[in-house]
Image (cartoon, rainbow, N blue to C red; front, side):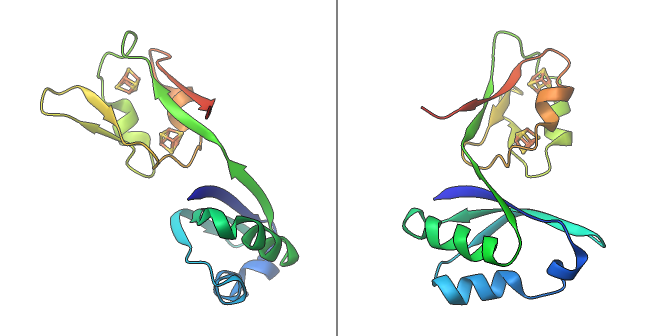
Length: 132
Ligand code: SF4
Ligand code: SF4
């Protein structure tokens, strides 16, 4: 699976059933990780099967969306982290959780790369890095 961010910048576009049309047109099973829609546009992060990526990107773009392939992973520096839990509360998709020993753990493959935790971590323990 590959994560992509789909951005519609106009209200006109988000009032149409774009997601359903892309699924029907490409035959790809798309999983929505996160979505934020307002009266003036919308953004969502979805998982796309690798063999359908090109078709799905093209199909969304034909409907006026801007697409960004998300290739970065969130990394936590355990030497810097003080397990304060701030990232647990701020992450919109639940990447962080406390383990049995009350240390903060990271769920791999869930991050939608919004950058919020990287900016807000009081210890500068988090970063988003390109996958190898
Ligand atoms: S916000 Fe930073 S210091 Fe606090 S638990 Fe998360 S990674 Fe660790
Ligand atoms: S960048 Fe941080 S806050 Fe945003 S989704 Fe990824 S882990 Fe969560």
